[in-house]
Amino acid sequence: MQAEDWSVLHDKVMVRRLEAEKERGGLAVPDKAQRQQSQGTVLRAGPGNGKGPLTVKEGDIVKFTAFSGVPLAEDDESVILLREEEILAFYRP
Image (spheres, rainbow, N blue to C red):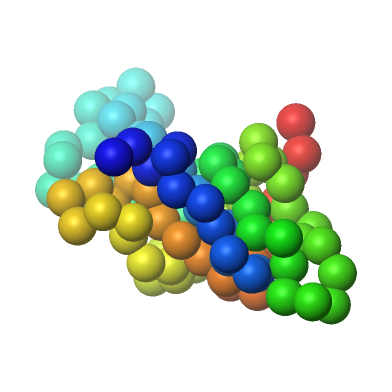
């Protein structure tokens, strides 16, 4: 089952992390030194928790803390579920 097949409930947001930097200032960054990205693209957004709709929408770029959220699949940490309150900032392209 693909991550995009899931639906999201309440105030939850499904996010695909952006790729980690492979190069910085023209130098290759070794795999061990790459940090997990703390920003991503919203794939799905829940309807809200009864107080109104969520602020973020599908396609928004969001910034969150490095340890936020829960991986959707055990073998793939690139898609995570967050509560909207865990999102620090967003950008709507």
